[in-house]
Length: 205
Image (cartoon, rainbow, N blue to C red; front, side, top):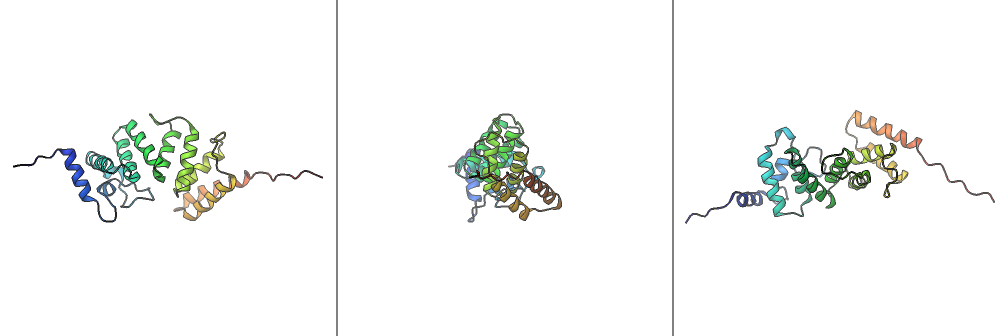
């Protein structure tokens, strides 16, 4: 008797078998983003990805383990590359809401850049970038402070304090990777100093 297995079921079986003991999956190996600090496998540039194969693999893994926010972020990345914008936005938000810092940064960027199918409320960008910055994402720290200094987050309820943003830049400076990143952070620090809130005057008695 010949056992016939559908292609989706076969992909699920192969994906499950490919996960190693340390939690690295086939999706991690073929779709990890080079700039994702929480990746568990070497990053893969877009040009090096076999999109059809990678999409099938990551979709199967996300179906098998929907609580894995890293997999759902990587699936969203592939959906975006293959022009499936609505699904990409939905998966990116799911990964962000599950607490994945890279997904929160990218989802906030979708909003700030007016991507189709993304919300238009800049205060959502503020919220997700702050979440991402607090989760350790360097780009989120820099972009958050940059937008805040430009007044883009004025009126948002959850704005970081001046002290919090100063702390972000202190950490960002310690993790800067190249000359241009350090230069940008220095400029933002100087702008923060100029924007230091005036001390509250005590009433005269």
